[in-house]
Length: 200
Length: 120
Ligand SMILES: Nc1nc2c(ncn2[C@@H]2O[C@H](COP(=O)(O)OP(=O)(O)OP(=O)(O)O)[C@@H](O)[C@H]2O)c(=O)[nH]1
Ligand SMILES: [Mg+2]
Image (tube, rainbow over all chains, first blue to last red; front, top):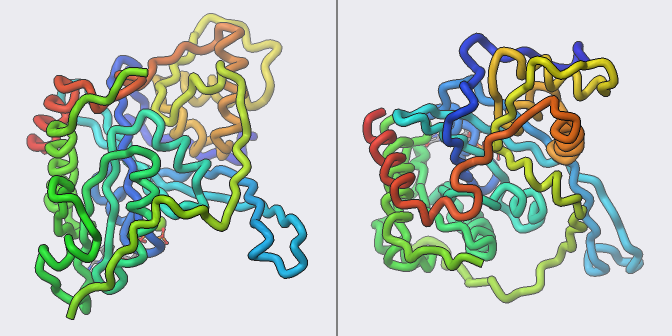
């Protein structure tokens, strides 16, 4: 047991009376989730893993046999302490529907999500957006600018993504702290405009 | 040139079925960002190695469930069982993320968050 774990750096522990808040940083493979979390985190980013059992249906299997596989889903996360005893946890999560059980667990009680997108393959973010909608998690879309990416006007991006007018769309460089912070500010501003959730 | 259009696909049946493990209510108590506080005076004698490791890790101060999972390399599903046992035996207390149910409804929290972010 002892050999398996690494110890936290000095100053990592909290007082225990902070207000912890969870935000999901979702997006397709290689879009910049880890970079984003690392840019804003004030602890060295950590990783948690969950084993998920998936059963693929007959369409995947020519013989029609049930086919169960175990997948390890890794999420990296970071922590950002703010004034007023707030501690924001940022979870970089694969947003694809096949990670449903892990995403559902993560989305419960989460404040909202940033869905990262890359204009060279915008369509890779569409299932992630649908998944956030299905999970009832409000989100803002953050477009990361990659060097050779096409530069679409915002209106074209909104139309392509079928974004409701009130959903924020921000351009963000996940390597840059100010820019990454601004994307979160836009998300929280958006949350303040939403109607209250019904209390079950 | 226009980017490829998105098809709204919310209504489709997806090609995967994910088996969701059901867990006992006391385990649902531990969110990723629930803070865990070790109680100093409880005896360690009958604890599992994982339970001891949690207490040792949290001795200097509180950590979130996700952080404990990362440091001890325990999946959340396993850690939740360990934590439920430690809670039952009085070895830990917890602080729920606030507010536990619908953080989006908490305007003062959202406003404090906005101020905190802008002050970064
Ligand atoms: N130009 C530019 N490059 C970026 C940006 N964000 C990430 N990158 C680069 O893109 C690459 C992939 O970034 P990651 O942060 O690893 O992406 P990820 O989403 O965590 O990837 P997976 O975990 O593999 O799905 C890295 O080389 C980053 O340096 C950005 O905003 N702008
Ligand atoms: Mg990554």
